[in-house]
Image (tube, rainbow, N blue to C red; front, side, top):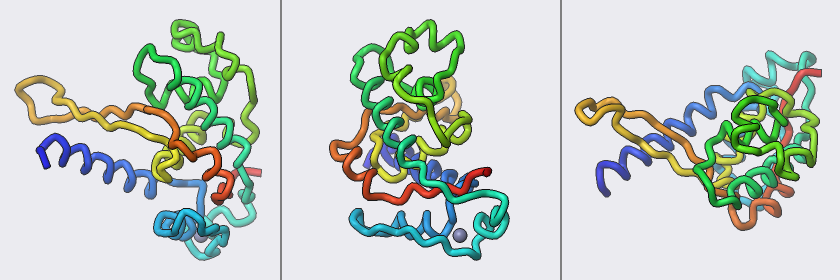
Length: 186
Ligand SMILES: [Zn+2]
């Protein structure tokens, strides 16, 4: 294994750990169980004792965000099908959230039918949408690339970029069978 491949593998592991730590929306036990489950196992039990379950019990409701997830997969499919530039997570989230910023206009994303197709029902903030996209990557329903580059030729400091390549071949089918319960504000 070359140094570059080893570092990129390491970067992905850090990415996964950050996902587990930053997750404010899903029962920690069910995240870990889903991670170790076989694809056909349907895990939908909330543990009731982790910090997410305890802190948000009563303040947030368990909601099935599958419809939003399906739309996000379709956004990814549409954006990655165009062969212009590299797609970063921010592009996906902006189109998904129907953002109206300079980049959306510059890249003409607002002219795509997918931009107007659906208004998210649950993932209404960029933070939530970005978390769901990370969830899709960790579940291997979305293919991504992590590129490490030296910030300058002489330094050992590396910068990390994530690019979105596309959805897994069976992603839409797979997603239907998985647990998409998120604990969100009422
Ligand atoms: Zn829990």
